[in-house]
Length: 363
Image (cartoon, rainbow, N blue to C red; front, top):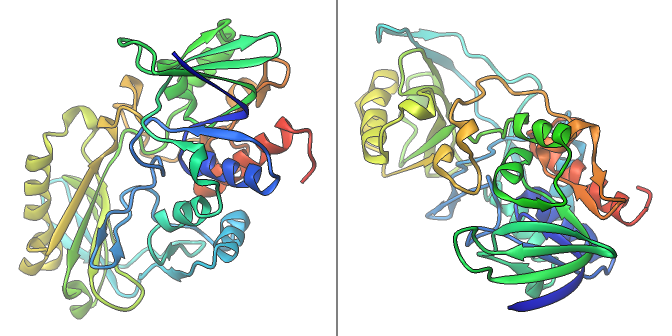
């Protein structure tokens, strides 16, 4: 079996893991990042259409309360723009009756990112050595050694792909996903394991859509694009357009629980049948539509995530621990943040905490 040594192993290539890699690269530290998927970004997913990037994961940041995200955007030379909220909203009752209502602007104001949220990941990756990110490297086992840790890459039902040893690891996966998919030797404590399993993975039970149009028909009739429905399939809709030019977009969350959602084709058909009731017939004829069911993503969701958290959960470090195994094992990932967990801000703060703790550094 192929073996490799590194000073630090980062597990997970979402925003938190990539940011930890960026911080380590700044400090000239030796590290390897292991990512299960064929791509980096984790729950940040932004497919491109004619130069526009449709966010199917995190869509907003809030400059007034997200100093780390705002600072990173500036560092990377990126540009944000306010969420479009001018006009009235639409509301659909359980019986399907739809009416126009006053809008509900975000407070504090939400912003979108030019180039999609994936531009954060791209900007960070451009500042990380090319050979340190290993895609298609799912971790199946983490073992504590006398002088560090050993990580086994592969699937539990197959022969291991390779093993890596390091002085420390930064686990930048959702705690619930890690507890349900990785074998730990020695066993993690009962309290820690239970805390990890009980930590909801934000968005893991959700599905999102993004419909693109050549014109914003809703704006022409005085609507903001914001909509809410009690009967579905869409439960929440927003204007997802670019800052100024085409394409224009409608985006939001499916309101049907994961266990009751049908296949992709049926869901898209139902969405295209619902949108005209909100915004007119043209809304049912987008030039492109995207649909992402995060509950079906094996590297995001577990069986415990099939019931989506409709309100943003309160996150905290698992069982109060951010480092275990005498400082060789460090938690990162937005669900382990002690402030704004589940958000992009929490992803950055948890990564910074893990790197500073791992190397006994100060901010």
